[in-house]
Image (cartoon, rainbow, N blue to C red; front, side, top):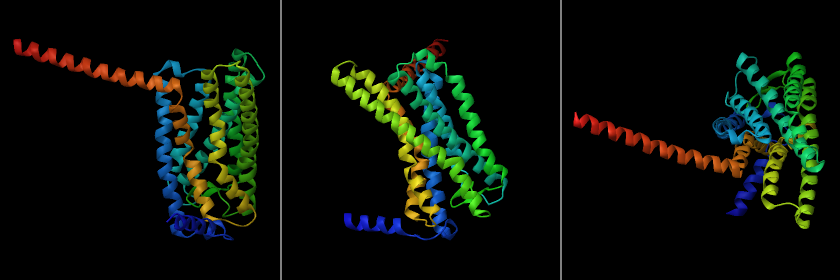
Length: 315
């Protein structure tokens, strides 16, 4: 049974080798769209959970949690865009989907770098925490501006359009220009962020191991720091197959199985971020307080209703 599953997956991975995106069958394209919509719905729910907890509990609005909040905002924008399905090429909805895809995915990448940079400055370089937190307005300005600037070239050159499964930077009308903007406006920034996030993660892990070995840091603080490092790492994992797909396709080959895995990874980003967020001790404590608060509220309302009934019966 296991061998059958493995051989089936291998056959799927090798299907469509040597083909281009335009050679995908209608069934393959529809499968990509269904996968994108399904997993994006999960990510949307997870991201909205982060936004909800941020809004109801002031204790979840620290500097680091504010950075996570903006990652969730970007995940919401990306998830909503995937849920448009596969609009007709050249339609207004297709253009809007492509704009949302490019802008929010790039912005989400940058926000993970903001987390990695903040950890690097506070933990590794021992910069005063208040000084790093003072960079928050600059993060806002730089990230949203850079995301908009990286959207302008493909939008201005008219290559935003249909791709297999949804709309993004298209290679249908002008393959060379479309592929150029895909790399320069998305994948090159992504790979730079990959390198920086992984470098920071390695340095933080090395420093933590050294401090724990020397008994100079307590376990709870290490766990809090380690959980924040996960967000930059999640980005690397979720876009691994997307990176592999683009590298292979740039060589003139497309492996449909890798495309499937890249779609699943990209659209699960918000879900995995929400899972890591939910496992944070402060968030779990806040959820417990919220649940107990709702139970007490229900009991109070039941008591009020009972008192009203008794008053009515006496009258």
